[in-house]
Length: 151
Image (cartoon, rainbow, N blue to C red; front, side):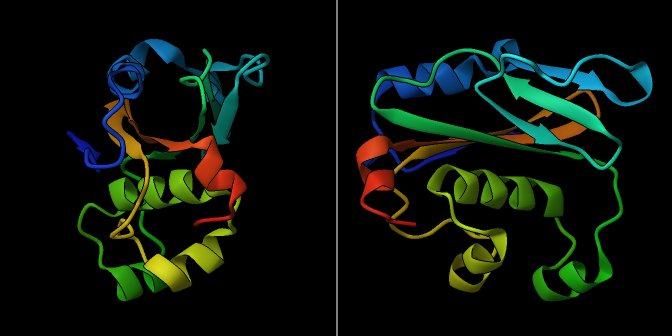
């Protein structure tokens, strides 16, 4: 899966470097393999099969960071498939979830405002990637934007 970024507003080389290194900053624990609950992670996400994905490392200075993870081959809930379509659903869902988390907006509110698309004026950067059998999205947004309540 590829990067998608609004480079007009999120042109920071440091932010892009952090996103480029996502695989090295993510760790998966729990599930059938056992393990901890991502202690010490900056942010975390829980999957439907009881695993925890944690982000280890600091966000770029002046930026907020959030992640979301889902099992890539999990069935798409029928109501969501009917509303948003099943194509690339988990990539779009994790991207929306990571964006709403970074802004502190409930997913139901985010879906009403933006659906599973990226807002036209999204002020940050994101990356969606596959890690083993998971789809994971990482979103970064300037803290000043979050503090103003944009989202």
